[in-house]
Length: 552
View 1: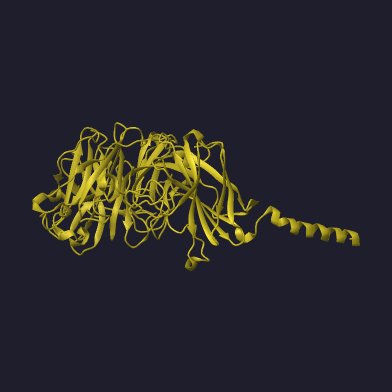
View 2 (view 1 turned 90 degrees about the horizontal axis):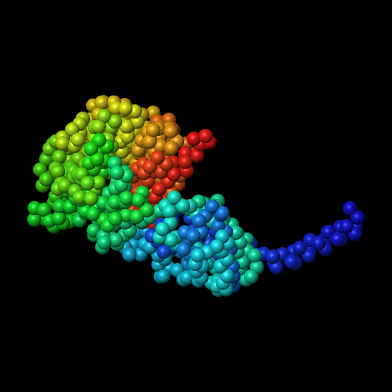
């Protein structure tokens, strides 16, 4: 290379480095961006889309953010986008990759779940009825050090629950200069949901323990604990609540109370709690059943530990049923079946919360759990051969298990999927004789991870779905620690495997983690679950979104 060529190259390099600050701000002033993976609720004014962190070393202002929606988004359903400032970071947290100083939106604070908490956020700018390209132009001053911003989306009230939002943050400017972007995750597809029950609705502190079924008329019936004073388990003032939807989950009727014991026996409501519901549709008759645990007395201490051996309501929890013959609109008085099914030596017998099933031969089956005479929990089933008039229990599937769900995987063959108190993974057993004998399924304690939490399992027969395949659907917090990453998984081989390509993540943030699935129609599955954004969140998901296989 000639001397002149070398000189020219040095001049060009020098020019590049002189001009570089004109094009980009310093690397230390990068915008660190995290796109959320949580439901967008159609009943929320604010839904978090992006979290942004800026370490302002040299720059003084955020001047522009640019977003782009994909062509598949129905922009008519997007009410508005908002840019918020979330404040600064504490010195003690410096050096850690946080994306907000505090949660801007609560899923658990009564009355503060539907819009940004003004104590934690400053609204900078709002764009209503946005187009495919959204530019937030601002001169918002930056505090020296780490600054937090976030972008919110509000959907119209008539947004379809099957709609999706695909949007990217494509550029940013600080001090009117292009700023580098660093993304914590890949672009995400945001799914719609509806908050069926929020903290504080109807003056109630907490709603927990979802169950969900589709009636013979296509009505969605969701049940849950109505925990009036706080979020703790029985014994407390708890009733069974129910929500109905006749339009596949788009809207939900006013809450009903199908089971309540009020001040029975002269004791206060808090010592007559009834909870942990399981719901079942008799496919032959159309009758809908709810099973629940009623506890009487026990001094507001946990019924799980304080229920005793025996049969009397003053000593031990009572297993009660209620039924509806009008599609869940009205309900019978509680029917106490404790004497039919409980062994007097057991300390407690109750249903596995979630849902029960009707077998192909018409047998009604509820999952159950009980604490035996030694204080060890066990899971099993109870069944009725006479449309709910009488019930029977045989033997448990496995010890040290609770909160099971049951599915008929073949005619006459029941699979029991159980919460295992040893942690790490789900226990799974099979019975061919209604619980007289059990065998461990090959997937037990190996295929489905869990953090010790309730889960949901349903069987979708080939003739009932658009894919024409026998499908097992499962949902739970897809982790071994904590209750987060609520995920729906599918199996096409009878539960032997749930491949990664047959999974949909719904909510990555922490919540209480319980869920219940139901088939809405031939194409769609519904889920009612304890999410990070509402106590009872409902979402609808296409089967083809879960089972991503060419040719199906």
